[in-house]
Length: 250
Length: 339
Image (cartoon, rainbow over all chains, first blue to last red; front, side, top):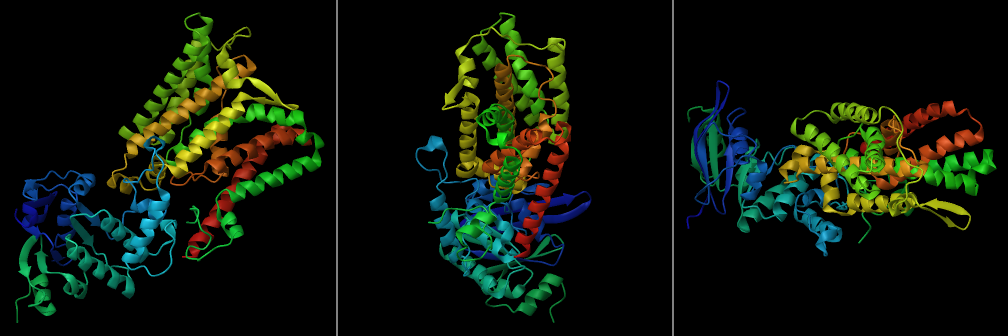
């Protein structure tokens, strides 16, 4: 068995006449955190949306664990073990933290035909998860999402991905709108996730955050991959910035 | 483990007092209103709390109340149904026409009438979820289709039969005495439906799906919630409860008027929103709806007892709706400002 988890091959995406992605190849190995960098409009979000099922590629193929995968929508992606955490985390704001974490996969008490959710277990698990993602404030898991701050909402989305052991967790700007402590918690979570055998794709504007956690940096520029194997330990932030903007190295 | 509460007063407060938690519940406003209403009416007219009057109230209330229970779940799921009043009138027409023509027994007619309601709910649900037409327009069309069918089928004449005998009639609306209080079986059915649907909404996975479908359908779908199927089931549930209520009503008064139930859709929606369920979906409460049903039915009854002209009834209903909506919106803003 190869250690390849996801392989995207020759991905092209056209929006009308605009070519958003041109022949992009991307491989994610097991136990790997890949930082995906690029300026605004470089195609990072488009590439990620294709992998998470929110967009369909114009052409190209995706292989997951060496099997060709058909990802038609987000539900398919979740079935393949790909969990995406967006900037505006997709939570139901009226529902409680615990109900959101378990939405669609609610634990049911015996006897099954009564369809009763195990709310005690849900609340307990949610409380534990909130501590693990680093929310130190005492927020009861029965709190509805609409009374949480942006950072707390992000943390709930991350807690959800953690709980369901996704193979690949895509974090799209997870540190936006976060306080210092919450940012550290997210970065810690990403490292934890790798240590437990998950892979991550980490997209962030803040290169410092990316440098702190990733194993490898991939750079997109104007819809093309321009760098694939940057080792953050052997490269300076300035060098990466030059690659992102396309300026010649001094 | 603490009992889960839908809305804590202070989002991050460690331990709100019992009183604070009570006030924070969406049912608190309607409960206060109901108590105030009872106090006012009783102080104006001693007959208000008489056995006869309570007995009368208990006969009428469950019929609109049942529809309101179904509507609560549907509205929590982000849709609503204007065709309930028509179904309320049409379903009993089917049952009584089949029976009077000698085509079927009353029991079989009852089952057929409920099946027709299932089809009406299914049609509403499919139009809304498959063709993405807003439920306002779909159910407005269905209101006219169903009402028209009832009038056409009967030539506008009431159906019914004084001499009909069937155990079904006792099961649905048979009356019995508790001391001096005459109680109809329909009250028990109403309580039964309220308990079951309250359980479904707050305790089950289905309830979680209903709230998620109304609150944020696209993210619910992304988590694997079958939003479309949930909504279709809710349309069917609402139509079946409206049919059940209509049949109950015609057995009680022994006649089925093809025009009965006209305007009920709006009164039912009023009951549901006064109870604290939000029109835009995502949040609903069965306890609140039961309170809302009582508030409006007591109002209709009490106004007459107190001596206000019956025709002024709608003024009070309108004022209550506006007052309750203002209260809910104020509470909502205060709640969100705290974060």
